[in-house]
Image (cartoon, rainbow, N blue to C red; front, top):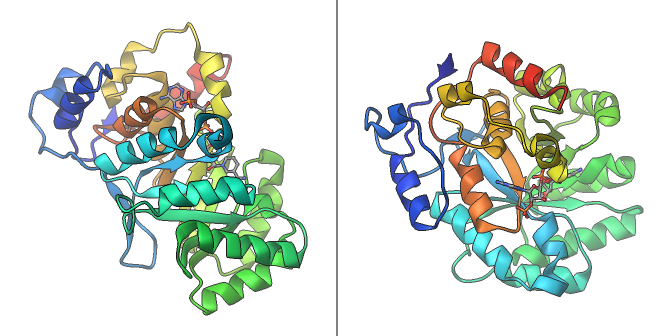
Length: 312
Ligand SMILES: NC(=O)c1ccc[n+]([C@@H]2O[C@H](COP(=O)([O-])OP(=O)(O)OC[C@H]3O[C@@H](n4cnc5c(N)ncnc54)[C@H](OP(=O)(O)O)[C@@H]3O)[C@@H](O)[C@H]2O)c1
């Protein structure tokens, strides 16, 4: 069984075919039985009028590759995201030289005003944290960043009072913390329970489902927006599924690739606001966006999905 979110990807698939991206679509979806929808579904940022598209872009790899590959891969992936109504770009401070080039991408006329950029602090010491905040503001070309997160809770006690101040002063619209490591989940949970957060960012996927035990239900209870990192365990997932057939029953939730298998698992969780997928390849971005269309697995199917991959 699968849950239907009332979306179809017929037109989406037609466009992908034009790009040479092959996604075998289930007949039920192609059969025009559902209303046409070309843009990514959105979910609300709890407690606000604002919504975010449910698939976003984690920019680490293409940004770090700017010195060797240039900025064209970033332009390609972000254009693809925008083509389907995507908006969320996750970043992390890099060297000033790299961020200067990335900033030129994010503030290019074709992107200006169309992105929701999640920025971070990931350093030790207060002075260095303030410097990173200034670098974030330069990166997005604005005094106000959409979202400021302390990455992996690094030096959190030192940075958090400033983060709260930047929210008060309007320099950060939303604030939060991130983790990408299961051993950190316990201390992360304590922080969630005690601090006025807008967003959390956590690692969650079909092979790394731990966040669904406590963090995701807690985020729902507290009314926090949730970004997901490591949907493919930084690429390790593809090594583990390599050479294996996608099960036939994946068609029951309109899944046509292993990438979508993990993403649909993530997106089926109601606490999730947006899954960040990192890629240097616009066609991979398109394939990942495809996970947001059609049906999503229900709880019984999610159990089956976890069981299938646990020994991979
Ligand atoms: N503590 C933190 O705050 C934290 C930690 C980790 C990550 N993050 C955020 O989360 C984002 C996601 O990062 P991640 O490290 O977790 O990476 P990920 O999205 O789990 O995996 C990225 C890898 O998957 C490959 N890939 C993506 N789509 C694909 C597709 N459709 N088919 C085949 N390969 C595909 C990419 O290669 P190609 O380039 O070839 O597509 C890349 O090697 C990061 O960019 C970052 O923004 C945050």
